[in-house]
Image (tube, helix red, strand yellow):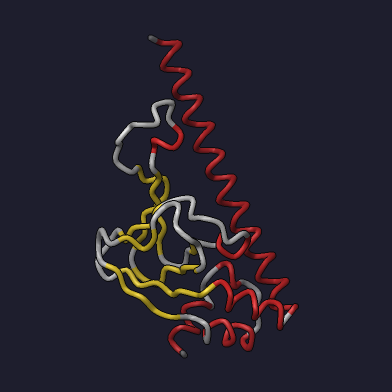
Length: 168
């Protein structure tokens, strides 16, 4: 558990947690290893775990047919984000336990993840309200940053496509 504790100390969503609180979270973690191309989870599957990258990279992929005006399109999945060490994903499982909004795939051999079951983490947050408050605050900040980055990419894409139309 000591190694996991050292790893989660560096993760943004655990910012400002006390050493004792970090130990409690570390006790919930399981380590899993994936190789290049292995699927961690698929889009539209049950979401019940939070993932933290401790080594390697993870691609977040989306099926473009879901936003196309051609629903029968059989396109390859497109990468919408590349995540690296210290970043988390799957956090929406903590909020609504709905279906996964994207596919996660290991982008490098020996990609190591810490995995936390959402039920265990929510129970810990309920048992330790100060830990829960700080963790949920950090999680909200992380999700806000991801939404802002996505918004900027969409705006950039829209502006770029409008320039192409006005030139041609």
